[in-house]
Length: 356
Image 1 (cartoon, rainbow, N blue to C red):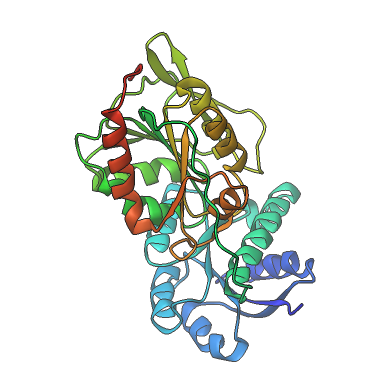
Image 2: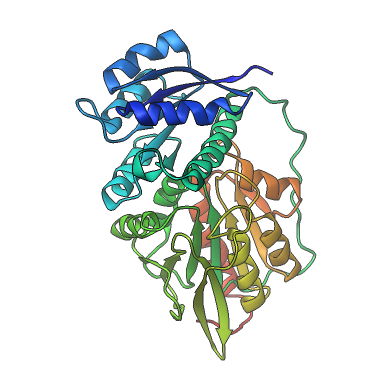
């Protein structure tokens, strides 16, 4: 198998060396070259012919955002992973980069190269993301007909929408959440794989765009119609029923699918709390988080819909749900919002059940 060629762009010689050493540990990855600034990076792309670029956000002269814009003009499909600091400034710049076409991001190890644990975290995360994003560019055999699973139960009322997403999720949510009307009749709970601080800033951005109120999840918060809650970074988010009310819970239980927050945790809890009255949505993302939770939702009588491959940045999460034959239907991102609104509206007119 041909190794994936990586171009590392960072103004710090220490970070360039650290990243080169981390990536050299994997035989499927080769560092094709490095660059110390954006101008050098643009010149080196035709020379090195990379399959993927890691790009520092904060660089003198042409910074990472400016470099990314130029890369996208010349190479619209070339995967770019932003390398940022775990600070408010770094998180804000990362979200800006994702909005400008970055494929994904990784946060830097701290303290001039970081501790062993920090380097191991970056190594595992970066290699996993490189392989996932590069694999998208490798032609794959066309799959057979996609099978969806029609429920034998009559459609029931929808009392909550639960969304899970990862790679490509911030842009997908930016497109999806503004589709919901101000009078949307059920709460929405979301897991987006992101670290602390990033999730709060994402919620703030979505809130500025949406007609609904979008916030980061809070312990003990009662769910009400028209609210959107995003799981905080590094905390699992759950929903529990207390009498006639439904409330959010947060915990630091072990990671699931190498994630905290995890989609499976949220999906299991909404199935337990709402039973059959759940609509689960799995959007673009790497890995299989959400598949086991989708199975629990289906077993409880709820419905699961997923984003299609063509509109996903990575079709790992939705693709795994499809492969497990757990999805009711598959939709492109631009059709997902109207379909959710339609299903909730139609099903709310059918029967009755406890509702927040």
